[in-house]
Image 1: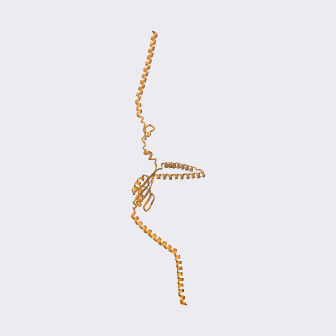
Image 2: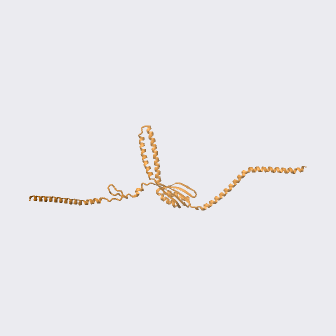
Length: 302
């Protein structure tokens, strides 16, 4: 009886302990779930502050994870490009000389000048140098001088050349300055002569680079236009007809004088022979007459 009671008491104690453990685990789970639920608003707030991934096209991401403003495409291309432009045009005009004068004025009004010019009675060739930003307007004005027959525009990208020359100019200037500092610290005549020779060479190289730099920048800022002006066929028909008559008259007179000259030259060349022939003929005639007189006088003497 006592043993049965002891076993029952032990079983009851074990059940109580297990029940307490189960209750404690359930409470811990509820506490954990409650804690997670309580932290959800904070997590949701943090999620709201996290920006959505920005599109890779046209945006850059900053170090703070915020999307930067888009960069315009024009800022990526227009600043660095250094373009040298040239153009050529052929225009048929009523009067080439008058059109050439108008072309010179167009170039001057645009801030340019005439680089070279060649003209004759019916055509003219000019090289106009105008600012690059004014070239399109100048071409339009030149086309208005008559009928545009042909137009060509070419563009050369000299960006790499300019960047290279600019870098070399900066490096060469630093080199010249270093040599000048060495020259100031020279202590012997031999060192002085050597450093001066080196300085002269580097300064000459710098001058060459500066000249090339100016030439490249000049090609970018100014644009040459080769203009050919030709007159329309038959524009000066009346003048040509009169000129043709005078030309024919002059040609005929020239042929006549040439004939006279050739005839006189032939007579001059034949004159010695004619004189000799005349002398021989006169002698023969004189001898013949003497023979006649001799025959006529012989019977009268008998």
